[in-house]
Image 1 (cartoon, rainbow, N blue to C red):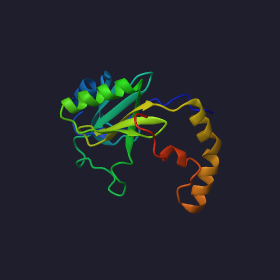
Image 2: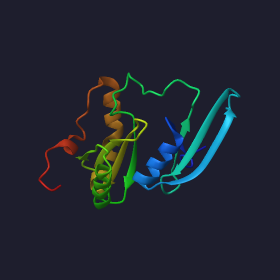
Image 3: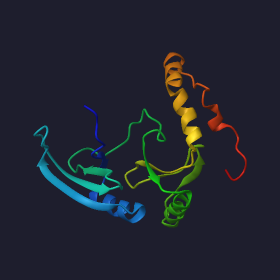
Amino acid sequence: MKIKRIHHVAYRCKDAKETVDWYVKHLNMDFVLAIAENEVPSTKAPDPYMHVFLDAGQGNVLAFFELPTQSDMDRDRNTPAWVQHLAMEVASMDELLAAKERLVAAGIEVIGPVNHTIFKSIYFFDPNGHRLELAANTGTPEMMQKLDDVKWEMLEEWSKTKKAPTHAAWMHAPQPEGQ
């Protein structure tokens, strides 16, 4: 068996309507489906929910559950806030910068663009506290090949030492202005 694609990714939300409205307004996603039940189909637990689905482009679906009878949602406090995030690709740097302008104009705090050498990103939070990233690819085929050539060595070294391997240190070297 080989996975065909990710069918959807699901997160919890505080308010399904607010969440749908936010993603439609700020990320131009289409609201495609809502499912609501009073019983969880897989476990048969009596737990009412609203499950909403948004089209994130090219068959990628982002979904949310509102769970009104459960304790207030929270995040994993043992994991730094910057770690768990959903990264979505935009077509160009122009689109990335335009998205940042729109988000900032709407009062949303945005970090970046951050230069990751092979892509540049902006970071912000949705109304549920989920960290989001928009990324524009900037890597060349040569850069991607260099990274592909060392990925297994890097993983093996990390596995043994738990220290950052230097095989791809070139990605974090100072770069000339404008790059």
